[in-house]
Length: 519
Image (cartoon, rainbow, N blue to C red; front, side, top):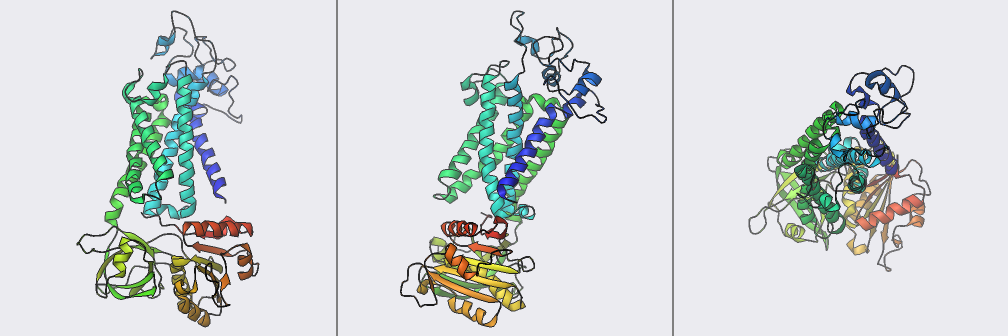
């Protein structure tokens, strides 16, 4: 199923979830409605079903304001007023009757919209929080693929912002409370429930900060972005308290249950997210072998100091590595894909591109030096039973998870039809080329294609140029049906390759894209 369809379905059910209290389930506020074989119906659009008006509230199902006091029957029920009593002074309804002049009898659309969008924004924010924690701790991968979860997370954030804007706009048009624009944008200036409104405004600005930094500085200052992203947790708490304190529908049992359930789950997940790094087992390792595969690719082999095997992993999984730098400080965790076969877990191998302080320090380490490993992580994995025909498409150091898969297939003698398309700038910077050729020599079900983008003097067996539609068709013999394509490399490389695959008619279902989510 395409991610856009998944998003649409989820949004539809969320809309139903927040609309239900205003319609069918709202009828149980004073009893149980017997619908029999008839469908729920609201002839006068007052938010109460005809059946509920007749059986419970004794109001007129053809008149949205039975007592003609200027407020709809559903509106009065939600506020706790009597829809049959013109003089009912309950709560604050009568405070809006100015000198005996009743408000014009009409449906209070802004009020309904403000209520609905407020609940929807909270529910969507709850879902965003679940997805965010799920991506970091990876429990969400049991339900949805990492790349789909990330896209879902992104678009839900945009949707929440649109819903919040609608919520604020509806409040400005509401004729009951009469919010001024500065009261909806500046904390502690509201004439109505100042504290509760202010919590919502603060939550709004936290959300804007999170969205803005994700859009504009995530790739420029990733470490700073990660720290700011923790604001999503106080954002969720503020939104929850804001909804509970100010929400008109908090009086309804179903809304109270919704807040208790989502608040409990959200709070539990936040605590789990904070504790997760300390729950992960660390393996103290020593370097057994280290060498430069090319001028900018270092290969590191590790063994556990207790001489036990590493935990079970699958081709495509990655691990977090740390070590003590020259000043004695522990480095921040960095993530790298396993490049060795899961069949041999006494020693694991990583191929790492030297391009920053961490990798430069790693490249200068020696046999016997200590490294701490955590993992495995990820869902970008080669599933031998599900993927009988698989094409690995790698760019540069993106070859490492596929080296794990190729070695594994050879060790297990798998019958899977495997193809590797491997792109680099030149022959000299192509790592593991000899080993790949050796694997192909011993595995008749595997064929390899090397391409170079900036090496016109490369031997004839090298394809020239970037991986595009024509190259794909040549390498797979135009057999795209029921073939899985696993793509790993730089973000630009992966996006360009996926666009080419889509142009060749490959369904998104058969395309896998690498993401490191445990940051």
